[in-house]
Image 1 (cartoon, one colour):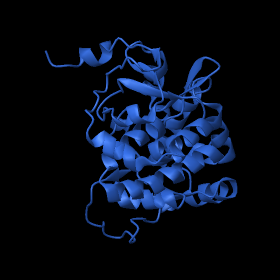
Image 2 (cartoon, rainbow, N blue to C red):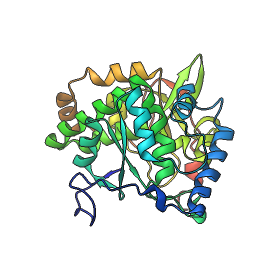
Image 3 (cartoon, one colour):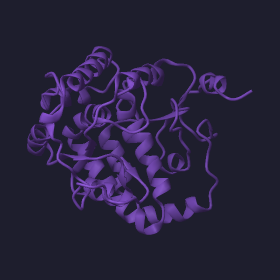
Length: 287
């Protein structure tokens, strides 16, 4: 939900928040949420980490219609001290980090149109709320998100946001978890996408690589299609431990002199759970 600096939208508060205005949603908008929810809810069990499904139940997101952010926030506050706040769209990096550092998750309030059901460029309320919010009920993941916001504020002063953004992308948005030898989904960009929920686990094309912080932060990513590589963690507790006890300053300086890695790169030292064919990406390359 972050982007480069821009002017404060009309009607937004200084922190870029706006009222959700839940009563303004029409029947067609609630119906779109229900359509998306039912499709994902039918195919995610057995594929997504169980903490995600538990979060849906804790937050009572299984009831029809677009959730009311005030109700979600009340339940989240009792669980992990988080809130959901509405914003008009993508927000500046520093605003995004400040909200996360204060345990506020920013969510767009609009929902996609029927012709955008499988893809839209700017995150909508389904991506932001269905994809992200259930895992904020998990204490370790909730702490990780706050720590990421605090780290983002430090990275902003160091001019290192680009590298840190890759950590968010490959964990919060497109992360996989390995449990008892099997891979499961947890990234919001995957669990809110019907196509990528299948592709990320089942397709032979992408690499699936064990999490390594420095290596991940060197790796470029795709913003226009399915990922060519996914990084795999062992648990949310492990992810928090491997990122919260790190002095990122020296790492940023080291990364400044390192060559970025292509999204499909594999290194000799990588822990590779699946060496992808990259057929999907190659088929889309211009002749």
